Image (cartoon, rainbow, N blue to C red; front, side, top):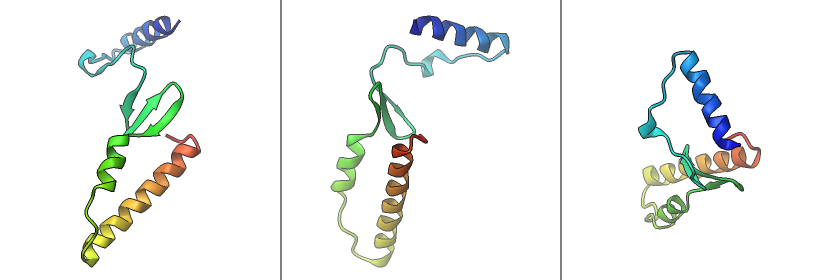
Length: 88
């Protein structure tokens, strides 16, 4: 069934003179990275490597570094809310 949908999508693209760059395509995967998140049949999740990298960051030692951490925290919070609401 899925393969038929893929074929139809490619046909529509070709009819409108759009072409697929196969080097940027991935088929038959159980998960893939998209917009810095991992998409699986069960839903969207955060890339665990990014969480590990954030946990291993050194603590801020000055105001500038502290502001960067605050901005990152704000981004992560809004990103998490978007995922919960299904907007990603």
